[in-house]
Structure formats: C-alpha cells, structure tokens
Image (cartoon, rainbow over all chains, first blue to last red; front, side, top):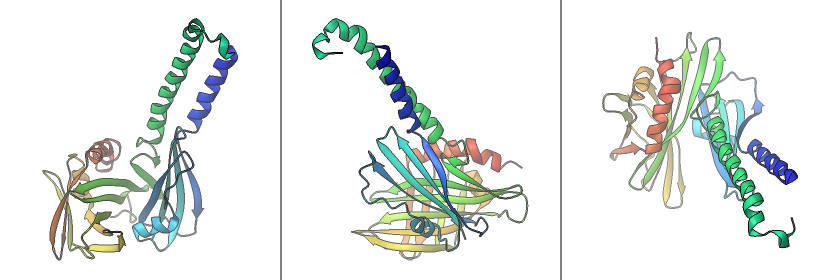
Length: 93
Length: 195
C-alpha cells in the first residue's frame, strides 16, 4: 500500500512538473530590440494532434510587420499533458 | 493487489482513499499551473510581455484582446515603451486582425472607446489581407496616443470602431477581454501611467 501511495505521489508530482509554461530563447541577432513585437501561436492536443499549427517565426514577424528580427523566444504551455500551446514571440524593426 | 481479493471492504478502506488523494493532488496542481503559467506576473507570462530596451526603458507587449461583431471576429495587441529618455515614445502601436467575409484592404481611421475616453488614429496601415475560404483575414497597424491609451484601461468595457472607404463598423470586446483589461490595469497600466 505504501509503495502504491509513493508511486501515486511521484506520478502526480511528475505530472505537475510538465503542466506549466516555459519560455525559451530561440535566437538573438545583433539588431537592437526593435519597436515591434509579433507573435504566432497554436494549440496541440495530447502531443499528437496538431491541426495545422502555425507558430512560425515568419508568421510572428508578418503579424507585426517585422523585417529585421532582433530576438525570438518560444513559450510552451502544457496543461496536464492534454492541451499544449506553442507561442513564438519575435521582436524587431 | 490480485483482483480476486478486491472486495468491497478493501476497496473502501484502501483504494478509495488513494483515489481521493490522487484527485485532490491533481486539483491542487491545476490551479498552481494556472497561477504560474497564465497570470500576468512576470516578464514572459500572462497578459503581457516585457523587454528591457535600455537603461530605464522597458518595452511592453500586451497579448491580443478579442473582440467580435455578429459573424466577424478579431483581436488587437499593443506594443509600447515606458521609461525615461529618447527611446521612449509618445505613441502605442496597435496591431489588429479582423476576420470577416467583407474585404477591407484599407482603413482610414481606428478608434478605441470607453464611456469616458477615446483613442483615435487616422493613420492605419495594412499589414496584409488574405483569403481563407469564404473569409478574409486582414491585419492592420496604427499608432495611438499613449496617455489616451492608458486612460482606456480605467474602464473594462471597450468598443472598437473602424472606418474605411465603405463605411464604419463597431466591434465589442469579449467578456474575457474585459477581465484581462481589469487585470492589466492592476498589474501594468496603473504603474506605467503614474507620474
């Protein structure tokens, strides 16, 4: 019984560690931080179903009219392994 | 535990508490995730992002707020700089998307309104206009006066008015956007607009 309980706690803790958001750097150029910020995002489900997610740098830059990219970050949000959100954030000029 | 030994008594005394415990832990985890991952509390989470541009100057990006009108939907995001020095600007860049069956390649004005404040731009540039099926996605960019933009956040009910060659359209911000506006005022704008 004790082993089962420990296993359940470990499973829930592991689950909690994968259920929040994380922002990571993708790229940085020598261009200064521009006055424009663009984003592109999309959801996926169960890490399996993507339905044509377009979270590309190109789309993020296009959404803000950016032609010279300064930085690119990506943010992943995962809710209990069920729903994943992918967001790319581009700054530039 | 072999299945043949899983009597009702064992289920109630051993399995049921374990199930309750696991569900309680999961329920505890979900709000924890929401509070750290979705709330506007940091530089890279929640309703806005912040970027350090230079000494004493920060650039903010407010994530899209949704609005709609009958069969049309849209969203608007804002970028502005706050701080002292030459890198700070008096305007806020508002980029907005409208998905509609109507084709509007150009706009002549955009206005954000509350009951007591209006922020208007008569210079709207079109970033792109694309057809997707029966609908057309158009994205525009305009610059709004910064102080009027700050005052918009004093009230959560916003209206967007666009004017083009074929006339004007009014859009209402969604209820979730109203909550976000209130949250943004508390977390960001009331500090940014203070002298």
